[in-house]
Length: 160
Image 1 (cartoon, rainbow, N blue to C red):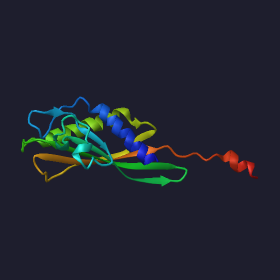
Image 2 (image 1 turned 45 degrees about the vertical axis):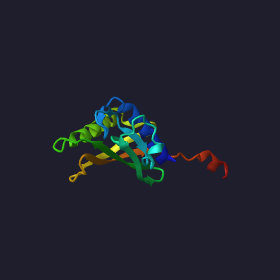
Image 3 (image 1 turned 60 degrees about the horizontal axis):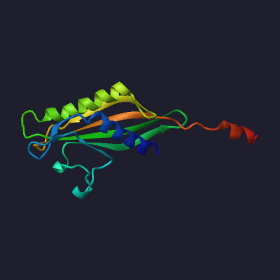
Image 4 (image 1 turned 90 degrees about the vertical axis):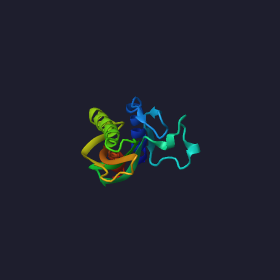
């Protein structure tokens, strides 16, 4: 269940760290912090809990990608962050998207641990070359080390 725990912890972490951001939405003159989703965004607008739906923008999705478990050594979990912002500024709309990511990156590096998970490895960011303007998207892959399960050797010793 480590992957689920990490996604849930990151979702809560980002809600706190990004709550003061005021970004444009698809509704004119409405600004708000990004919606934060663990896994996947809701499929129906009626499932959204925001007072102003604004068709989901801006948002950050935290998605489990996979894990590598070297038994009795180290377990790493890869997570993808997907950032979506909205801006009608065709020249500078990308800046809001990169600003959200910069906030996430800074918060992760300052904290370095999210619950029992430690930030490790490299962070790979991709601000898409081709954007579906006026929406702007980027993704980042981040790795965390998870605590390793410890074997209770006292049980094994009692059997001999």
